[in-house]
Amino acid sequence: MNSSVEYGDLTRLHGLAGVVLHPIQDPSPLDAATAQFLGSVGLPHGRFFSSRAGLVGDEREPYVLADLFALGNRYCPEESHAWHVLGYLPAALVVLDPSSGAVYIFQDSARDYQLAHRDVAALVHCLAEFRKLEDDYEAPEPDVEGLVDTFRAAVNAIDPTPLADPDSEWNRMLEEVREEMW
Image (cartoon, rainbow, N blue to C red; front, side, top):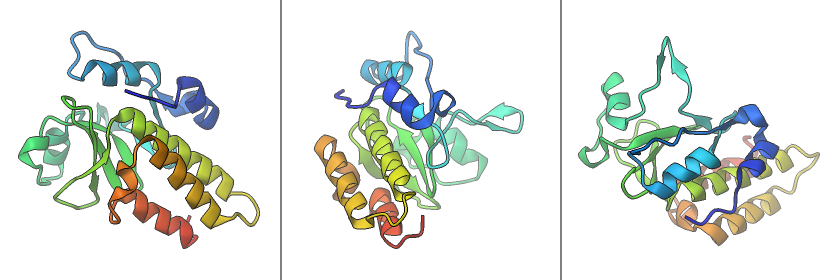
């Protein structure tokens, strides 16, 4: 797993409280590289991406996709029952196939999923780049097209998967940025 983002990078962007490290279990249900990355680098947690580390009532959110979808009587494709919930984008659920390490997105109310990232390191890289875009967007009179182009170049340099499908969640969010809906 090739990662351009380290724990220190995430803490600079999100603060100490904005990074969720996952305990490394032995044996782990995750492939070794994914478990190591989540245990040493972690996932951001904040306004844009919420790690699944939250609570629902008095209980932890379900970690396995089938359990989460069962709560809402939502259809869960057979092959994705054992996938792990990583967190939430504004309009999508982000999940991990623990055997392959690939990251998928279920857009709100969609029955099907999309391959979103080759691995969790590529997801975190994309989230870090989007946070930079978001921070730069706050500047007076931002160059929105320039911000989007910079984001696209940075993401494509590591993993072109998130932007390959014109209907991907990332392309939808970039369109909202272009339309200045953020």
